[in-house]
Image 1 (cartoon, one colour):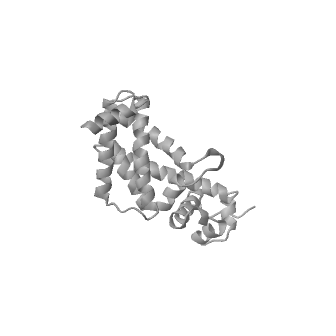
Image 2: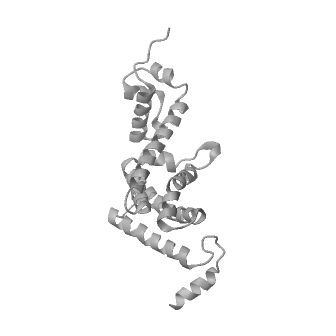
Image 3: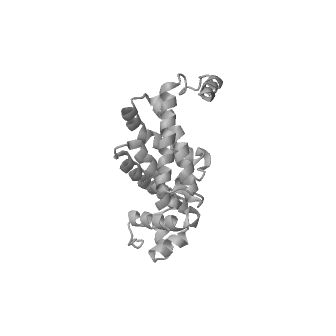
Length: 207
């Protein structure tokens, strides 16, 4: 009979998350996980068939953590602004997990960033519909454009190149949100991308 593993699977996953959170996903090896737990590698492979299985569990745990940030943001008085600031906060507080979710490729399924965009969109869509009185298509267009701004700022933070304070980031998000929502409401065909862009710009230049 094989010896009983003194760590539960949940404890193993938590240890793997700690390794990745400190050193990044590439640092997660059987040896590194065993060192984190203070054991040999045998218990690691008793719990996980391969280290890739452990990495998949870390990804799922990181996504769950990210979702908790999102839900906290959506509970604020301005839900979508709360989402944006919580997205930024996640990047600040868990940069390596942010890299894992948003800045890596995922083999045959493509970019993790695009997968995460769809995941986040599904979480936020209903809040946008209710708050801004818009349909699903409009909510998705609004979310995509705003997410690209939020994602860019968060990526600057994770890569150490963001010069903006939290207050400045809030102003950037608010300004872009107002501009985008105004365009959605006042330019026929904006959401569908079938409006006369040249005519709109000529009219703006005249003002």
